[in-house]
Length: 491
Image 1 (cartoon, one colour):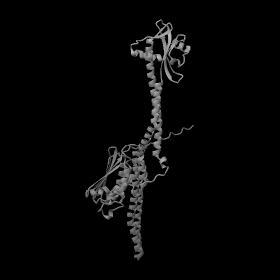
Image 2 (cartoon, one colour; image 1 turned 90 degrees about the vertical axis):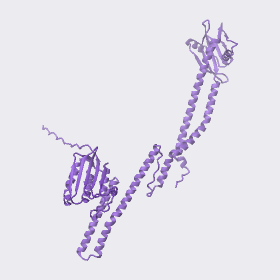
Image 3 (spheres, rainbow, N blue to C red; image 1 turned 180 degrees about the vertical axis):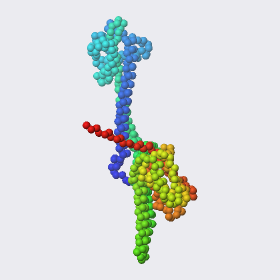
Image 4 (tube, one colour; image 1 turned 120 degrees about the vertical axis):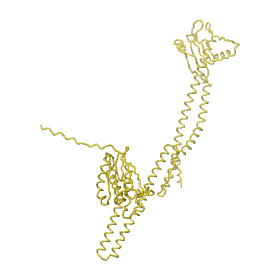
C-alpha cells in the first residue's frame, strides 16, 4: 500500500527541489545568452555600419571638389546609381578648412552639433580617422566618420559624413523585446521538462523506498530490477539489493541455526529425560540408579559438545570469529598431524602416510588449519575399514598450495556429494556408531572459504574419497636473527 504524502511534502520533495534548481539555472542561462547574443548582434551591426561609411567615405572623396573654399560635387547625372550615392552622402556631411572654419554642411549634420577647431586640428595634425556617435536634438543617433581631404592644390581640409543608427537601434530593440517576451515560455517549457525528467530520474528512489517499506522477515527476497543505465541510481539499486541479499542470508542462517538447534537438541534431551524417568520410576537398586545417571551424563556431554560446536560454527559464519594469520610451512603442520594420528590408525589397523613437497608456505590461522586437517583425518579414519590407507599430500601449486587427504574407505555416492558440507548432514546408510555431529565438514568448508581457498571432493562408492584443497601461496617467512649488543667499554 502506497503511503500518502502530506500537504507540504510536494514542496519539500527532491523532485520539486531539482525542478526549482533547474529552473533557476535555466533562467540564468537564458538571460545570459540573451545579453550575449544582443551584444553579438550589436557588434555585427556596428561593423556593418563602419563598412558602409568606409565605402561612402571613399565615394565622397571621389565626388567632392573644393575650389577657393567653395565646396562642389561632381558626378555623372545620367547615372542613377551615382546620383543616389551622392544624394545619400549629401544628407549628412560636413566640410571645414584647416583652421576649423566650416565651409559647407548639411542641415542634418548641423543638428548634430559643431566640431571644435581643436578637434579638427587634432585629426588633421595626427592624420587619424574620427569615429563618433553624435545625436540630433530630436535624440536620433548618427555614426560619424571624419578624416583628411586633400584637394588638387595640396590644401588640407576636414571632411565628415554620417549615417543614422536608428535602424540599428530599432533592430536591437526588436530583438530584445522578442527574446525576453519569449523567455517566460522557454522557462516554463524547460521547467515542465525538468519536472518530467526529475520524476523519471528519481522514480527508482521511490521504488526503493516503497520496496523497503514492504520488507519484513517473511519476504526478504524482494529485489529492485536494474535500470540498465549504469549510473548512480543503478549503483544505489545494486547496493540495496546486495544489502537485502546479506539480510536474507543472515535471517536464513538464523532460521537454520534455530532449526538445527531444535532438531539436534531434541534427541539428547529426550534421552536424558528417559534416563531420569527410568531412575525415578523403575530403578530399585543403587547400581540401577548409578547406571541411569551415567547414561544421562553421557547424553549431557554429547549435548554440551553439540552446543559448543554449533555456537563456534555460527560465530565463524557470521564473521565474529577473527582469523589470526601467520606465515608457516603447511608441510610441518601436516607432518605433525600424521604423527599424532599414527596410534589411532594402528589401533584401527589402518596405514597413514604422507607425501610432502617442501616448502609450501601459506599465510593462515594456525588454529583453524589444525582444525581443518584434524577434521579431515578424523573423517577418513572413521569411514575407512581395517587394512585401508589414508594419505596426506602437500605440494606447491601455481600461486597456491595444495592439500589433499585421500582414503580407501567406503566412499560417497555421487548424489550425496553436494550436501556433505551442509550442517548436520549425514550420508544415508552410514552405520549409527560412525555418525558424529555432522559439523566437521561444515567447519572444513568455512575454514577454506575464510582463507580465500577452494575445496573439491572426488569420491566413488566403495573406492574411497579424495579431498582436494587449495590455499593462496604466501612469501616465505624470514627468520629474524637478534643482533647481540656490543659489550660496554669501561672507563
